[in-house]
Length: 120
Image 1 (cartoon, rainbow, N blue to C red):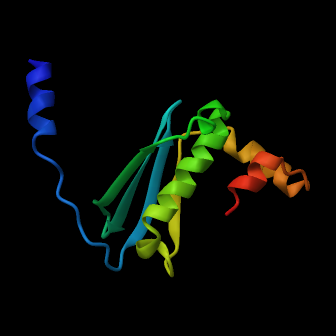
Image 2 (cartoon, helix red, strand yellow):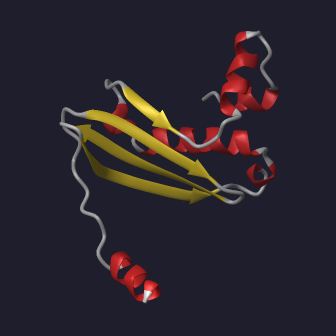
C-alpha cells in the first residue's frame, strides 16, 4: 500500500513557480556521493518550489569531510540558481551542525587550504 502511494506521488511532480518578490530560500544537502539544492520562495507565509538541482561529486571530492561536501552543495546550488539569487537577500538552509565550527575557525584567522579552494 505504501509503495503504491509513493509511486503515485512520484508520478505527479510538484509544479515549479517563477520567483517574483518573495523571500528566497536555498535548501541544500549532501551525501557521500551526491549533492542537491532546492530553490524555494516564501511569499505571504506560503512556500513555493522554484527549482531543483543535483549532481554527483567528483572522485576527489568524494573523499572530503561531510562539512566540506555541504559547503560544495551550497556552492553548486548558488551557481545553479545564480540568476534568481543575484540582487536578492536569501537564506541558506542546510543540515550540518559542524558548519558553524568552521566559520568560527575562519573568524579566528585559521583557514584550511581546502576551504580556500571552495571560496570561488
